[in-house]
Length: 368
Ligand SMILES: Nc1ncnc2c1ncn2[C@@H]1O[C@H](COP(=O)(O)OP(=O)(O)OP(=O)(O)O)[C@@H](O)[C@H]1O
Image (cartoon, rainbow, N blue to C red):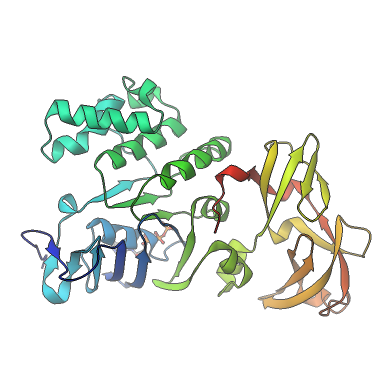
C-alpha cells in the first residue's frame, strides 16, 4: 500500500542539510539496503556493476520507488519514512533528474522545455519563460532557445536537459548516466562543461556512471554499490589507492598524474616525458593511467624507474604499487611475480602504452 503525506514533513530541530538517505527497497528477489549522505555542493558518483541497484536507489530518491525501510531526508525535509508513514510523492519533491536519453519534449522548443517544470508547478507562462531563460543564460545556451530538440547535437541536448532540471530549482540533482547517449568525442567535450555547471549548483548531486574517468572528472566522492549494498565510499584518490573489492580494483585502479602537454610531448610531474597521445589537450593536463596501459620492465629501460611498494592480489592478478615519480599501479599475473623478482623495495622500470591513457584538461578536475 502506498503511503502519502499531505505535505512535506519538516524534521524538527534538524539543521538544514543535504541528502541523508538510508534506502531499503525490494524489487522482486533483489534487495537494496544502502546509505547515501551527500552534503550541499558535493558531487557523488554512484558506481557499480550491472544490476547493483544504482537505478533503484536513484528511483527511490526521486520518489518513483517507495522505501520498504530506512528513511530519506533532503534539506531537512523527510521525503520517505515508512515507520512514520511519510511518503512525499515525486512531484512534490524538489528533485531534478537528468536521464541518459534526455527526455526533452520533441514538440517544444528549448525555452519551452525548460519552462515546463515551472509551469507544472503553477508559474505563469511569462514567469516560467523568464526563469527558464535565465537558466539558459547561466549555462551559455541562450542561442539555442528557439530550437527544437531534433535540431540539437547530443551534447547540446544533454546540457538543455540539465538546464531544464535546474530551472525547477531542485534541492537535489540526480544524473543517470548523463553521457550514455554521446559518442566518445562528444563525451570528452561535454564532461568538462558539466563539471563546471555542477560546481555552480549549490545542492547535493548524485551521478550514476559506469565510467571511472567520468567519475573522477565529475565527482568529489565515489560510492560503489554491489549486490544492493555500499561496498566502498570515499574520495576518488583514496578509493583508487585502496579498492575494497575486485570490482572496485578493476574499475578505479587508475593512477592519476598531473602533467603538461607541450607539442608532441606529455611531461609528467616528477620529470618523466612520454609521447603525447593524439587527442591530448595542450597545456596543463591530468592523465589517468589504467594498470592495463602500464608494464614493468628492467630498470633503465622504461619511461621512469621506481621501487616496488605494496603487492595486492586480485584474482589471478597482483596489483603492484610502484613508488616513483610519478607513482604507478601495474597489474601482473600472479605466476609472473617470482620470475620478475617483485618484492617490496626492488627497483623496476615502468613502460607506458600511451594509447591506453586518458588525458584531459586540468581545469576540469576536482581538487579533492
Ligand atoms: N521492476 C522490477 N522488478 C523486479 N526486479 C527488478 C525490477 N527492476 C529491476 N529489478 C532488479 O533489481 C536489481 C537492481 O536493478 P537496477 O536497475 O537498480 O541496477 P543498476 O545498478 O542500475 O544496473 P545497470 O547498471 O544495469 O543499469 C536487478 O537485479 C534487477 O534485475
